[in-house]
Length: 411
Image 1: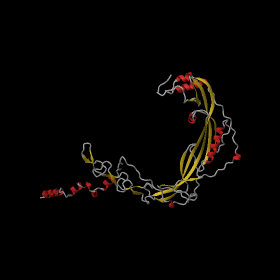
Image 2: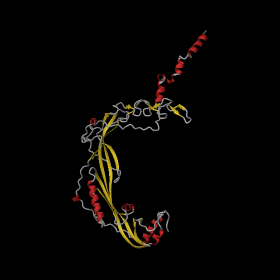
Image 3: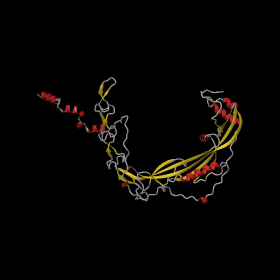
Image 4: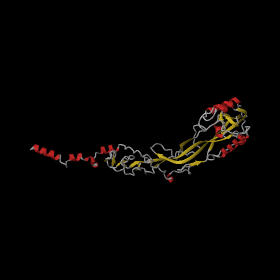
Protein backbone atom coordinates (compact mmCIF):
# COMPACT_ATOMS: atom_id res chain seq x y z
CA UNK A 1 0.00 0.00 0.00
CA UNK A 2 2.73 2.57 0.77
CA UNK A 3 4.43 1.53 -2.41
CA UNK A 4 1.29 2.15 -4.46
CA UNK A 5 0.82 5.56 -2.87
CA UNK A 6 4.45 6.37 -3.58
CA UNK A 7 4.05 5.21 -7.15
CA UNK A 8 0.96 7.37 -7.46
CA UNK A 9 2.82 10.38 -6.28
CA UNK A 10 5.60 9.64 -8.75
CA UNK A 11 3.10 9.24 -11.57
CA UNK A 12 1.31 12.44 -10.61
CA UNK A 13 4.59 14.31 -10.48
CA UNK A 14 5.24 13.24 -14.10
CA UNK A 15 1.87 14.34 -15.38
CA UNK A 16 1.85 17.07 -18.05
CA UNK A 17 0.37 19.57 -15.63
CA UNK A 18 2.96 18.95 -12.92
CA UNK A 19 5.45 21.57 -11.71
CA UNK A 20 8.35 19.63 -13.20
CA UNK A 21 6.88 19.99 -16.65
CA UNK A 22 6.24 23.63 -15.97
CA UNK A 23 9.79 24.20 -14.86
CA UNK A 24 11.15 22.39 -17.89
CA UNK A 25 8.95 24.31 -20.32
CA UNK A 26 9.39 27.69 -18.66
CA UNK A 27 12.44 28.64 -20.71
CA UNK A 28 10.23 30.68 -23.09
CA UNK A 29 8.18 32.30 -20.33
CA UNK A 30 9.84 35.54 -19.32
CA UNK A 31 7.71 35.78 -16.18
CA UNK A 32 9.30 32.61 -14.81
CA UNK A 33 12.85 33.57 -15.78
CA UNK A 34 15.10 34.20 -12.79
CA UNK A 35 16.00 37.86 -12.28
CA UNK A 36 19.72 37.12 -12.18
CA UNK A 37 19.50 35.39 -15.56
CA UNK A 38 17.66 38.42 -17.05
CA UNK A 39 20.29 40.88 -15.79
CA UNK A 40 23.08 38.63 -16.99
CA UNK A 41 21.55 38.43 -20.46
CA UNK A 42 21.08 42.19 -20.71
CA UNK A 43 24.55 42.91 -19.36
CA UNK A 44 26.09 41.40 -22.47
CA UNK A 45 26.78 44.12 -24.99
CA UNK A 46 25.24 43.47 -28.39
CA UNK A 47 27.66 43.62 -31.29
CA UNK A 48 26.79 46.46 -33.69
CA UNK A 49 25.89 45.48 -37.27
CA UNK A 50 28.58 45.98 -39.90
CA UNK A 51 26.89 49.07 -41.32
CA UNK A 52 26.09 50.63 -37.94
CA UNK A 53 26.53 54.39 -37.90
CA UNK A 54 26.13 56.44 -34.75
CA UNK A 55 24.39 59.24 -36.60
CA UNK A 56 22.71 60.70 -33.56
CA UNK A 57 22.82 64.50 -33.85
CA UNK A 58 25.06 66.44 -31.52
CA UNK A 59 23.40 67.94 -28.45
CA UNK A 60 21.86 71.32 -29.12
CA UNK A 61 22.88 74.35 -27.13
CA UNK A 62 20.85 75.36 -24.08
CA UNK A 63 18.52 78.36 -24.45
CA UNK A 64 20.56 81.55 -24.33
CA UNK A 65 18.14 83.17 -21.87
CA UNK A 66 19.12 80.57 -19.25
CA UNK A 67 22.74 81.67 -19.31
CA UNK A 68 24.01 83.97 -16.57
CA UNK A 69 24.70 87.61 -17.38
CA UNK A 70 28.47 87.99 -17.14
CA UNK A 71 29.86 91.49 -16.86
CA UNK A 72 31.89 92.39 -19.94
CA UNK A 73 30.52 89.44 -21.93
CA UNK A 74 26.91 90.49 -22.46
CA UNK A 75 27.35 90.10 -26.24
CA UNK A 76 28.41 86.44 -26.06
CA UNK A 77 26.15 83.76 -27.58
CA UNK A 78 26.62 80.14 -28.58
CA UNK A 79 27.85 81.36 -31.96
CA UNK A 80 31.54 82.25 -32.16
CA UNK A 81 32.04 86.03 -32.03
CA UNK A 82 35.29 87.80 -32.91
CA UNK A 83 36.68 90.23 -30.35
CA UNK A 84 38.56 93.16 -31.94
CA UNK A 85 42.05 93.65 -30.49
CA UNK A 86 42.92 96.75 -28.50
CA UNK A 87 44.18 99.62 -30.61
CA UNK A 88 47.96 99.73 -30.75
CA UNK A 89 49.75 103.01 -31.28
CA UNK A 90 53.12 103.12 -32.99
CA UNK A 91 55.18 106.27 -32.69
CA UNK A 92 56.75 106.41 -36.12
CA UNK A 93 58.56 109.65 -35.28
CA UNK A 94 60.35 107.88 -32.47
CA UNK A 95 61.47 105.01 -34.65
CA UNK A 96 64.36 105.56 -36.97
CA UNK A 97 64.67 103.62 -40.18
CA UNK A 98 67.32 100.91 -39.69
CA UNK A 99 70.63 101.09 -41.46
CA UNK A 100 71.07 98.33 -43.99
CA UNK A 101 74.14 97.07 -45.78
CA UNK A 102 74.07 96.82 -49.58
CA UNK A 103 73.38 93.33 -50.96
CA UNK A 104 76.36 91.28 -52.16
CA UNK A 105 77.08 90.73 -55.83
CA UNK A 106 75.93 87.55 -57.52
CA UNK A 107 78.44 84.86 -58.63
CA UNK A 108 79.58 84.68 -62.25
CA UNK A 109 79.18 81.53 -64.33
CA UNK A 110 82.00 80.37 -66.63
CA UNK A 111 81.48 78.85 -70.07
CA UNK A 112 82.64 75.44 -68.85
CA UNK A 113 80.23 75.49 -65.90
CA UNK A 114 77.35 76.45 -68.20
CA UNK A 115 78.12 73.56 -70.56
CA UNK A 116 78.55 71.03 -67.74
CA UNK A 117 75.24 72.07 -66.21
CA UNK A 118 73.46 71.58 -69.55
CA UNK A 119 75.09 68.16 -70.11
CA UNK A 120 73.98 67.04 -66.65
CA UNK A 121 70.45 68.20 -67.41
CA UNK A 122 70.38 66.43 -70.79
CA UNK A 123 71.37 63.08 -69.27
CA UNK A 124 68.18 63.11 -67.19
CA UNK A 125 65.97 63.57 -70.29
CA UNK A 126 65.45 60.47 -72.41
CA UNK A 127 64.44 62.47 -75.49
CA UNK A 128 67.33 64.92 -75.38
CA UNK A 129 70.45 64.31 -77.43
CA UNK A 130 73.89 65.04 -75.94
CA UNK A 131 75.46 66.20 -79.21
CA UNK A 132 74.02 69.71 -79.09
CA UNK A 133 75.14 70.31 -75.50
CA UNK A 134 78.58 68.92 -76.26
CA UNK A 135 79.24 70.66 -79.59
CA UNK A 136 77.33 73.95 -79.37
CA UNK A 137 79.27 77.19 -79.51
CA UNK A 138 78.56 79.45 -76.52
CA UNK A 139 78.72 83.01 -77.81
CA UNK A 140 77.75 85.05 -74.75
CA UNK A 141 76.61 84.75 -71.13
CA UNK A 142 74.44 87.42 -69.51
CA UNK A 143 74.45 87.42 -65.71
CA UNK A 144 71.56 88.71 -63.62
CA UNK A 145 69.79 88.12 -60.33
CA UNK A 146 66.25 87.15 -59.49
CA UNK A 147 64.89 88.51 -56.21
CA UNK A 148 62.47 86.49 -54.11
CA UNK A 149 60.93 88.71 -51.44
CA UNK A 150 58.84 87.18 -48.61
CA UNK A 151 56.86 89.02 -45.94
CA UNK A 152 55.43 87.16 -42.93
CA UNK A 153 53.03 88.69 -40.42
CA UNK A 154 52.29 86.62 -37.33
CA UNK A 155 48.89 87.55 -35.86
CA UNK A 156 46.62 86.56 -33.00
CA UNK A 157 42.81 86.41 -33.18
CA UNK A 158 40.50 85.94 -30.20
CA UNK A 159 36.90 84.72 -30.28
CA UNK A 160 34.39 83.99 -27.53
CA UNK A 161 31.30 81.79 -27.26
CA UNK A 162 29.20 80.07 -24.63
CA UNK A 163 30.01 76.39 -24.23
CA UNK A 164 28.80 73.52 -22.06
CA UNK A 165 30.07 70.12 -20.97
CA UNK A 166 28.92 67.34 -18.60
CA UNK A 167 29.33 68.20 -14.94
CA UNK A 168 30.94 65.42 -12.90
CA UNK A 169 31.26 67.35 -9.67
CA UNK A 170 34.00 69.54 -8.26
CA UNK A 171 34.59 73.24 -7.70
CA UNK A 172 32.94 75.68 -10.09
CA UNK A 173 34.59 79.03 -10.82
CA UNK A 174 31.44 81.15 -10.97
CA UNK A 175 31.17 84.94 -11.35
CA UNK A 176 30.66 85.40 -7.60
CA UNK A 177 34.29 84.48 -6.91
CA UNK A 178 35.80 87.39 -8.85
CA UNK A 179 35.30 89.69 -11.83
CA UNK A 180 35.99 87.90 -15.15
CA UNK A 181 39.00 89.24 -17.07
CA UNK A 182 38.57 90.69 -20.55
CA UNK A 183 39.19 88.51 -23.61
CA UNK A 184 42.52 90.20 -24.35
CA UNK A 185 43.60 90.18 -20.68
CA UNK A 186 43.84 86.40 -20.49
CA UNK A 187 47.38 85.07 -20.90
CA UNK A 188 47.91 82.89 -23.97
CA UNK A 189 51.24 82.17 -25.63
CA UNK A 190 51.85 80.36 -28.95
CA UNK A 191 54.15 77.36 -29.02
CA UNK A 192 56.43 79.09 -31.52
CA UNK A 193 56.44 82.27 -33.57
CA UNK A 194 55.44 82.27 -37.23
CA UNK A 195 53.68 78.91 -36.81
CA UNK A 196 49.91 78.63 -36.97
CA UNK A 197 48.12 77.05 -33.99
CA UNK A 198 44.90 77.26 -31.98
CA UNK A 199 43.97 76.85 -28.33
CA UNK A 200 40.79 77.02 -26.26
CA UNK A 201 40.63 78.47 -22.75
CA UNK A 202 37.82 78.64 -20.22
CA UNK A 203 37.34 82.26 -19.25
CA UNK A 204 37.85 82.47 -15.47
CA UNK A 205 34.85 83.25 -13.22
CA UNK A 206 32.18 82.53 -15.88
CA UNK A 207 31.09 78.96 -15.04
CA UNK A 208 27.74 77.83 -13.63
CA UNK A 209 25.85 74.55 -13.15
CA UNK A 210 22.56 73.99 -14.98
CA UNK A 211 20.10 71.13 -15.32
CA UNK A 212 20.69 69.31 -18.58
CA UNK A 213 18.39 70.83 -21.20
CA UNK A 214 18.34 67.62 -23.27
CA UNK A 215 17.21 65.02 -20.73
CA UNK A 216 15.74 67.39 -18.11
CA UNK A 217 18.11 66.06 -15.45
CA UNK A 218 17.21 62.38 -15.92
CA UNK A 219 20.53 61.44 -17.48
CA UNK A 220 18.94 59.19 -20.11
CA UNK A 221 16.72 59.69 -23.11
CA UNK A 222 14.98 57.66 -25.77
CA UNK A 223 17.42 55.71 -27.88
CA UNK A 224 17.88 57.32 -31.27
CA UNK A 225 18.90 54.08 -33.03
CA UNK A 226 15.82 51.99 -32.18
CA UNK A 227 13.40 54.89 -31.47
CA UNK A 228 12.93 53.58 -27.94
CA UNK A 229 11.71 50.12 -28.99
CA UNK A 230 14.73 48.29 -27.58
CA UNK A 231 15.12 46.21 -30.72
CA UNK A 232 15.77 46.71 -34.42
CA UNK A 233 15.44 44.68 -37.58
CA UNK A 234 17.95 41.87 -37.95
CA UNK A 235 20.58 42.96 -40.46
CA UNK A 236 21.35 39.36 -41.48
CA UNK A 237 17.87 38.27 -42.65
CA UNK A 238 16.43 41.80 -43.06
CA UNK A 239 13.60 41.02 -40.65
CA UNK A 240 12.37 37.86 -42.41
CA UNK A 241 13.66 35.43 -39.78
CA UNK A 242 14.81 32.98 -42.47
CA UNK A 243 17.58 32.93 -45.02
CA UNK A 244 18.29 31.05 -48.22
CA UNK A 245 21.43 28.94 -48.11
CA UNK A 246 23.80 28.28 -50.99
CA UNK A 247 22.05 24.93 -51.52
CA UNK A 248 18.70 26.67 -52.00
CA UNK A 249 17.30 25.63 -48.64
CA UNK A 250 15.19 27.92 -46.45
CA UNK A 251 16.59 27.84 -42.91
CA UNK A 252 16.10 29.86 -39.78
CA UNK A 253 18.41 32.87 -39.32
CA UNK A 254 21.04 31.97 -36.75
CA UNK A 255 21.57 35.59 -35.67
CA UNK A 256 17.99 36.40 -34.63
CA UNK A 257 16.85 32.76 -34.15
CA UNK A 258 13.93 33.30 -36.50
CA UNK A 259 12.44 36.32 -34.75
CA UNK A 260 13.51 38.79 -37.45
CA UNK A 261 14.79 41.30 -34.93
CA UNK A 262 17.70 41.75 -32.57
CA UNK A 263 18.32 43.66 -29.42
CA UNK A 264 19.41 47.24 -30.14
CA UNK A 265 23.20 47.47 -30.12
CA UNK A 266 23.14 51.06 -28.89
CA UNK A 267 20.87 50.84 -25.82
CA UNK A 268 21.30 47.08 -25.30
CA UNK A 269 17.52 46.59 -25.43
CA UNK A 270 16.57 49.13 -22.78
CA UNK A 271 15.08 51.65 -25.20
CA UNK A 272 16.92 54.38 -23.32
CA UNK A 273 20.41 55.64 -24.08
CA UNK A 274 22.86 57.68 -22.08
CA UNK A 275 22.33 61.40 -22.64
CA UNK A 276 25.21 62.80 -24.68
CA UNK A 277 24.78 66.29 -23.28
CA UNK A 278 25.43 65.42 -19.63
CA UNK A 279 26.91 61.89 -19.99
CA UNK A 280 24.26 60.59 -17.59
CA UNK A 281 24.89 63.04 -14.73
CA UNK A 282 21.78 65.14 -15.40
CA UNK A 283 23.78 68.37 -15.02
CA UNK A 284 25.94 70.45 -17.33
CA UNK A 285 28.61 73.04 -16.70
CA UNK A 286 28.14 76.23 -18.75
CA UNK A 287 31.02 78.64 -19.26
CA UNK A 288 32.42 81.16 -21.74
CA UNK A 289 35.10 79.72 -23.98
CA UNK A 290 37.94 81.78 -25.44
CA UNK A 291 39.32 80.57 -28.78
CA UNK A 292 42.78 81.92 -29.57
CA UNK A 293 44.05 81.45 -33.13
CA UNK A 294 47.58 82.26 -34.25
CA UNK A 295 48.07 82.65 -37.99
CA UNK A 296 51.16 83.27 -40.07
CA UNK A 297 50.18 85.34 -43.10
CA UNK A 298 52.68 85.05 -45.96
CA UNK A 299 52.98 87.14 -49.09
CA UNK A 300 55.77 86.96 -51.63
CA UNK A 301 56.95 88.63 -54.80
CA UNK A 302 59.47 87.55 -57.41
CA UNK A 303 61.40 90.01 -59.52
CA UNK A 304 62.81 88.25 -62.55
CA UNK A 305 64.03 89.74 -65.81
CA UNK A 306 65.02 86.51 -67.57
CA UNK A 307 62.98 83.81 -69.31
CA UNK A 308 62.81 81.54 -66.24
CA UNK A 309 59.23 81.24 -64.86
CA UNK A 310 58.59 82.55 -61.34
CA UNK A 311 57.64 79.11 -60.02
CA UNK A 312 61.01 77.71 -61.06
CA UNK A 313 62.78 80.68 -59.52
CA UNK A 314 61.09 79.98 -56.19
CA UNK A 315 62.24 76.35 -56.27
CA UNK A 316 65.84 77.28 -57.05
CA UNK A 317 68.39 77.51 -54.27
CA UNK A 318 69.38 81.05 -53.48
CA UNK A 319 71.21 83.04 -50.90
CA UNK A 320 69.38 84.94 -48.18
CA UNK A 321 71.05 88.33 -48.41
CA UNK A 322 68.62 90.22 -46.22
CA UNK A 323 66.40 89.33 -43.24
CA UNK A 324 64.73 91.42 -40.54
CA UNK A 325 62.26 90.66 -37.74
CA UNK A 326 60.42 93.08 -35.46
CA UNK A 327 56.98 94.02 -34.17
CA UNK A 328 56.64 96.43 -37.07
CA UNK A 329 58.86 96.54 -40.15
CA UNK A 330 60.08 99.23 -42.46
CA UNK A 331 59.85 98.39 -46.17
CA UNK A 332 62.99 97.37 -48.01
CA UNK A 333 64.46 100.36 -49.82
CA UNK A 334 68.18 99.74 -50.28
CA UNK A 335 68.24 97.25 -53.16
CA UNK A 336 69.61 98.44 -56.52
CA UNK A 337 66.53 97.01 -58.26
CA UNK A 338 63.74 99.46 -57.42
CA UNK A 339 61.12 96.84 -58.33
CA UNK A 340 61.87 94.82 -55.21
CA UNK A 341 61.76 97.99 -53.09
CA UNK A 342 58.36 98.89 -54.48
CA UNK A 343 57.03 95.36 -53.93
CA UNK A 344 58.18 95.46 -50.31
CA UNK A 345 56.49 98.82 -49.73
CA UNK A 346 53.19 97.60 -51.16
CA UNK A 347 53.15 94.35 -49.17
CA UNK A 348 54.09 96.04 -45.88
CA UNK A 349 51.30 98.57 -46.38
CA UNK A 350 48.88 95.77 -47.23
CA UNK A 351 49.68 93.79 -44.06
CA UNK A 352 49.31 96.90 -41.92
CA UNK A 353 45.57 97.08 -42.65
CA UNK A 354 44.59 93.63 -43.94
CA UNK A 355 44.03 91.97 -40.54
CA UNK A 356 41.80 94.40 -38.68
CA UNK A 357 40.28 91.67 -36.45
CA UNK A 358 43.71 90.35 -35.45
CA UNK A 359 46.60 91.68 -33.44
CA UNK A 360 50.01 91.75 -35.11
CA UNK A 361 52.59 90.09 -32.87
CA UNK A 362 55.67 89.91 -35.10
CA UNK A 363 56.72 90.56 -38.66
CA UNK A 364 59.56 89.10 -40.66
CA UNK A 365 60.74 89.67 -44.20
CA UNK A 366 63.66 88.38 -46.21
CA UNK A 367 65.13 88.64 -49.66
CA UNK A 368 66.70 85.72 -51.48
CA UNK A 369 68.95 86.28 -54.46
CA UNK A 370 68.86 83.55 -57.09
CA UNK A 371 71.66 83.91 -59.66
CA UNK A 372 70.52 83.58 -63.26
CA UNK A 373 72.80 83.18 -66.28
CA UNK A 374 71.34 83.47 -69.79
CA UNK A 375 73.56 81.49 -72.14
CA UNK A 376 73.54 82.38 -75.86
CA UNK A 377 74.62 79.52 -78.13
CA UNK A 378 74.79 78.41 -81.73
CA UNK A 379 74.54 74.81 -82.94
CA UNK A 380 74.33 73.99 -86.62
CA UNK A 381 71.56 76.27 -87.92
CA UNK A 382 70.08 76.94 -84.46
CA UNK A 383 70.75 80.08 -82.45
CA UNK A 384 68.99 80.39 -79.14
CA UNK A 385 69.44 80.66 -75.36
CA UNK A 386 69.01 78.61 -72.23
CA UNK A 387 69.12 79.66 -68.59
CA UNK A 388 71.15 78.39 -65.65
CA UNK A 389 69.68 79.46 -62.31
CA UNK A 390 70.22 78.79 -58.62
CA UNK A 391 73.36 77.72 -56.81
CA UNK A 392 72.65 74.10 -57.76
CA UNK A 393 72.73 75.23 -61.43
CA UNK A 394 69.28 74.17 -62.60
CA UNK A 395 68.48 74.41 -66.30
CA UNK A 396 65.56 76.02 -68.12
CA UNK A 397 65.86 75.10 -71.81
CA UNK A 398 62.42 74.86 -73.43
CA UNK A 399 63.92 75.32 -76.92
CA UNK A 400 66.73 72.79 -76.75
CA UNK A 401 67.59 72.02 -80.41
CA UNK A 402 68.12 68.24 -80.24
CA UNK A 403 64.96 66.50 -79.03
CA UNK A 404 62.58 63.85 -80.28
CA UNK A 405 59.15 62.65 -79.16
CA UNK A 406 59.54 58.88 -79.57
CA UNK A 407 61.09 58.25 -76.14
CA UNK A 408 64.54 57.28 -77.45
CA UNK A 409 67.91 58.85 -76.63
CA UNK A 410 69.83 60.81 -79.27
CA UNK A 411 73.65 60.98 -79.32
